[in-house]
Length: 176
Image (cartoon, rainbow, N blue to C red; front, side, top):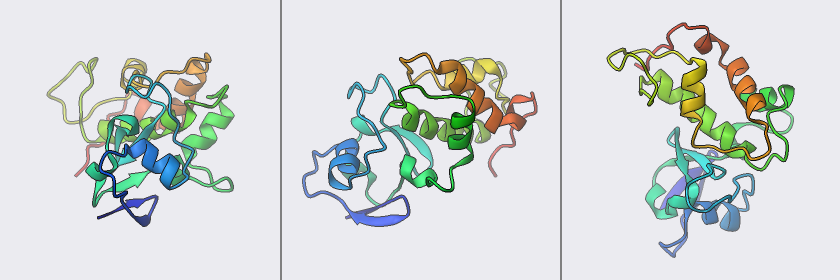
């Protein structure tokens, strides 16, 4: 069995007990994804599986057979940052930087959820096909990712700046 990680096809580990987090970090040496609480509470290990955010510490690598995995290393490069990575730099959205990869992957997945019309706990109109990335929506949707250093306002500013069109109370177009 194989999976695609950051556009590259790789074989899955033989041991079906290997978590996706350990597979990425220990087997593929993609250390951008961090191990935080290892209980799914902090979001530091968030990666994208087929574009959806997933906690790598709570997922088994074998569950991802045939799927596309995107880690922080797959979003941008040091010379060609993803727009959200650049915004984190510009808005001081990190301090220790430990949670930053998970925050960025989570925000990328969050915007796709919003565009797909997935409501959150604070969504006012559940019947609407388009949702707006308001301040409350952004904070609620990112609540699964903790920043213990106090960079939370910078993180929110970076996400808001990157997805400004969504925050101006203009509905985000839903996916076709």
